[in-house]
Picture 1: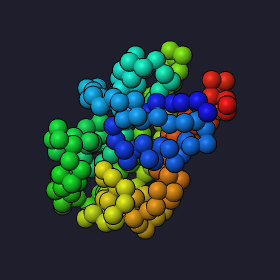
Picture 2: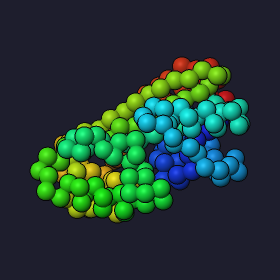
Picture 3: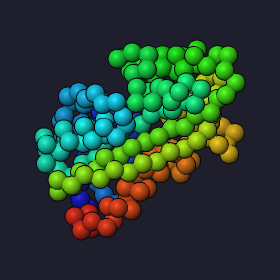
Length: 198
């Protein structure tokens, strides 16, 4: 099966992606390529960040690769934290501090509507492709659950009574923003001869 490099140092994301793409291709992490350098996220949009990361890794290794950027977009906060979701409370990218900042800003706000949006940039044979997935829901008033990562413990998807952090990886993957984007990516990879099963 052909290798596809996932341009991230986030092991949680690697595990989630392997769970979703395992039957289509062999997902290779940056750690397995002995790449521990910082991946830049200097753009003002999710699409820009995903492309920037994918281009850096593609240029370095010359292997088919993809990168994602994900944002939590809260209606009452005019779309914040959005592209700055990972570093909302500071450059150290501390999830607990990010959650605290969101909950603090929304302390007296009744409109809890929000969505997660994931953008994936794929580069194969110098060609670039974009895939997107979203999931709508609301921000809880306090963290609930022990699974997941990022803002999962304060996000409840429409139609569900539990937070993302209370769902198993399998349950979350079926409805999540990343799951939807990866599903589109997987369907596309199946059409490429370079990813035909060995």
